[in-house]
Image 1 (spheres, rainbow, N blue to C red):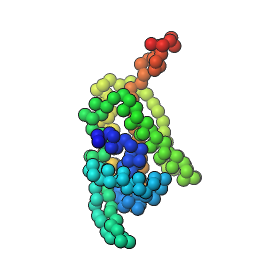
Image 2: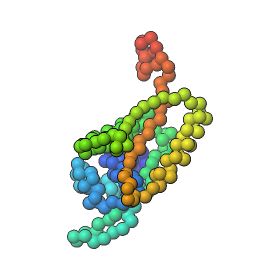
Image 3: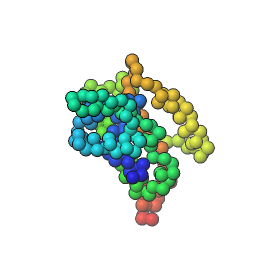
Image 4: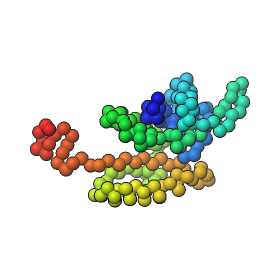
Length: 189
């Protein structure tokens, strides 16, 4: 199974996201976080991720006649590499993005379901924007963003810290005057 097939399954993607932010979770804790996933199915997905080296066991203890394992995420193994992404078809990328977007929607719905949401207090929001960049300027922007974000991704859980999710999508805008499947005049291409 390729890394994309492994990671871009809706349940496995949710499992990976649950571990983001340097979290260590037992299967029981994960079962509570993903309460809508049937436990037998969840255990199978955890086993797949463990066997692929995405999750690692960091401790084990006996609990009620069974072994309770605590897992952490091996972040380097939890992404689709550039070479594999380059070999994916447009349809595979579309399917992968659909899983990503569905996960984002699920996280947003979960945030809203907490009740008393306050976007300003919670530091939550969503927006879109456009900028004109050369290839060199785009590469520079991505480097600058990485320089700002990497140290924060390395923060460990601690007093006063709340886990925050950051999603990003960078797309070139459609060619001016072109809408998918039509020309500027509105006719089919």
